Image (cartoon, rainbow, N blue to C red; front, side):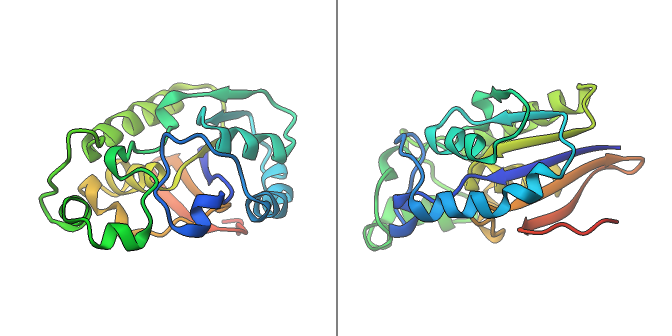
Length: 198
């Protein structure tokens, strides 16, 4: 049985203020570092064979804090959804931004030119999963971002439209787990700071 653990990076200063963050390459906050140090013993006990990681600084710093005895393999497909013109905006600003409201909440989202489509993120998440499924490694850790992980779970695992990712909650410094078994690809844990053996 193959297992993929998805770890959302630790919190950043922008997570604290609610600002959207994709391409702005900021590091972890003190809180974020504490989140990762808190979950590190759990991750270190997963008997990992491979570590994949978004190239963004906040994900790379998360990987380094875990202190795993494995190389960190950057994969650009794990980068966050590109928020484009919404990058850096606060919740108060977004509440008054009609294009954001139409993009984020509408059943048929209108995607501004500068913003990456949900389908684009779903496509690269699917390509990543397909590659992980063909590796000889049995237990893989992928360190990534909130929207990316939720779109991957919604679309690639649960078969939902990728824009429904907002219905899932994935906090900073938490694990979500997938397995490939005789029934295919399945979600066994979501938004966890501890894991129970089956």
